[in-house]
Image: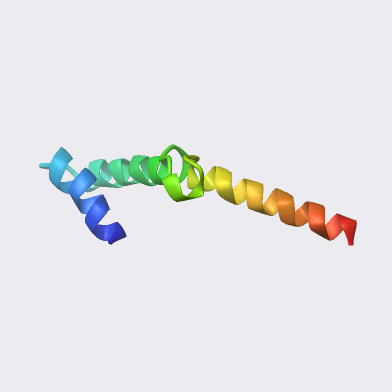
Length: 66
C-alpha cells in the first residue's frame, strides 16, 4: 500500500525523471511529508511524528511515576 501511494504521488505524477538524484531528492521530500506534515484522521488529525512524540512523552511520565 505505501509503495503504491509513493509511486502514484511522486514517481508517476512528477516524472519523467532526469536523474537518479532527482528521484532520490523527491523521495526524501515525500518521506518527510508523509511522516511530519501529513494529517492522519485516526490519530486526531495530527502528523504521525507528532503522535509518536506524544506517545513517548506519556510513556516517560508513567515510568517516572512508578
